[in-house]
Every structure is written in structure tokens, then in C-alpha cells.
Image (cartoon, rainbow, N blue to C red; front, side, top):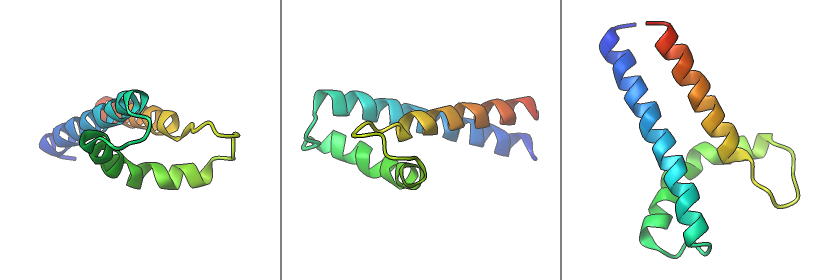
Length: 84
């Protein structure tokens, strides 16, 4: 793969990681999701979380999908950086 594409992919993964962490903090502060920034973060990250949430077993109200997605993003970033 060209180095510029790998660089772009690395930046894209970093942005996704920041979005997921920002969503976590925003939902800790604003549990209802009524704030515009919280709503934006949920809208941006939900298309990635929903399929993962469907694959995970029910855990009685705990949502582990953001953790799974963040772990997958870190693994993907390590694979991409090691392939350079």
C-alpha cells in the first residue's frame, strides 16, 4: 500500500478513537443525550457500534461495544503501523 494511504488510515483511526473517547465522556456528563455535542458524537459513532452491539451477548444493561471497538481500532492501528 502507498505510504500516503497508510498515513491517512492511521490518522482516520486516531480520529475514530478520539470520537469514541469523547462519546464516553459526553455520555458520562450528559446521560440523557440531550446536548447537541453529545447527540453529534452519538450520531457519528453509532453506525460503528450498532453492528458490534448485535454480535455481543446481552450483559444485563452493560454495553461493552465501545470497549470492543476501541480494542479493535488499536489492534488495527498496530497491524497497519507494523506493515510499513
